Length: 417
Image (cartoon, rainbow, N blue to C red; front, side, top):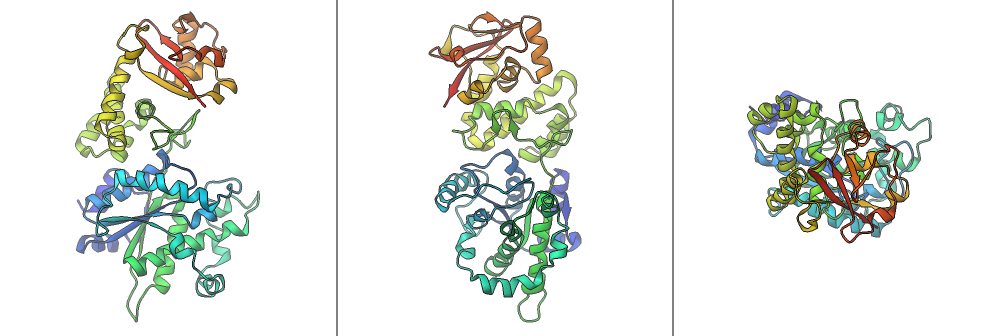
């Protein structure tokens, strides 16, 4: 199969422009493709994995990839998917965030040789733009009427769209034009919510990118958004985002997140986020009943290995196995651990959410069943009230709180500031 068909086979194509021409374009030479990541936090999260894995697939196929760390666009803020204006970051905050994000991108992409892949910061060219020249050169190629039909803007019209945010599409489009001219980049990829922005960049290149009387070739490809079966965004828990930084989401917590993915999404996630061959993915995705747990364990192991390495994945898997292996609960050194922010307890964390967050129960409904049947203890005290709320004092032991389900499954839960 050609690369686009490979991506489709893995479910990684939502929309694509000029598909026949793009297939020919990719099949005749090594091309350059890019995706952008705004450093709005000190770490990327699970929601960023789709474009990261998209770049990884292109690089595996022999193409050159560019990851844009958007130090310039982050100063403006992408309105996509937001109901109100983003918090404005300082340049120092953005610079600090870039350090961790660049490191994480290097885990998934080969960035040692610029001929194969590199990370660029768009503040390097956006920061030196003359605003008047930018308006005169770029502004005439954008229709305000058309921009307002874009989903990223249309959703915001009721609550108010700032002029600052209105510039974001122009800046992202200019990124694509700059990369086309300076890096011979001909394809931008991203999440499907970025379709309008990416399409605008492609059209700008086709108007301004051609040198002499040649024809500028530029293409767009978007990937599906990562959602649950009922349409909610994946990549979040009650603790917040599932981060790629191990200091924010530990390898064990990351493993448990994928271990608890809903049954209907296991096959998709194996295709999206692992390097397993598709024959194996399809076989695992076809498991039903209790057998689906084996597919989930494979998903959790492969995704954790890809991000944190094989040793961390093995340790997380062993901790998960010990969780249900009946290790004596008083042997703290051999027991698995989980961490929770202290604020979550102060805010009123209940026993049902604690069981779900730690992976001892897949849902609040299952957690409620366990509690009402007397199968849950905290520090050896039976918890029979589903409304029971934890207190910071419950975690005051040297190893934290001992949470047990039944006779065998247990773990130590510690609080972090």
